[in-house]
Image (cartoon, rainbow, N blue to C red; front, side, top):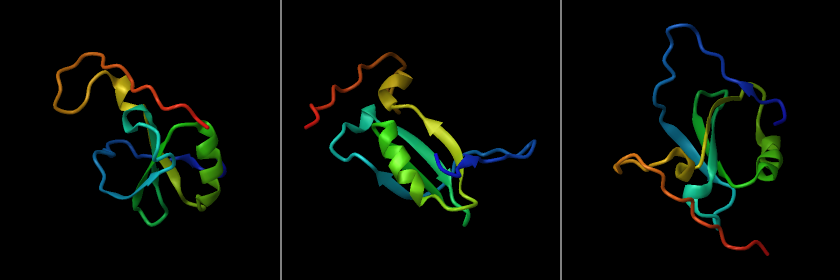
Length: 101
């Protein structure tokens, strides 16, 4: 992923929840519950969520990362976590994506 490194944290520093300044969806036609996401901390301390369906999309988008940006988190697709917010735990099947053309 280009020059992107993992964000460093100091002992006792809780990354906690962050206000996401920007959400970038690299594949708007792909079902949201079947997309992974990256949380990028930019050099200006703003966070961007990048939703993607393939590694190739991330490779192309990584050219837009600047020096000082770092990877704060990798989030699996919601359907792989096992439940959605507000629902009881339990496996929910992933949405079958439409065929690619």
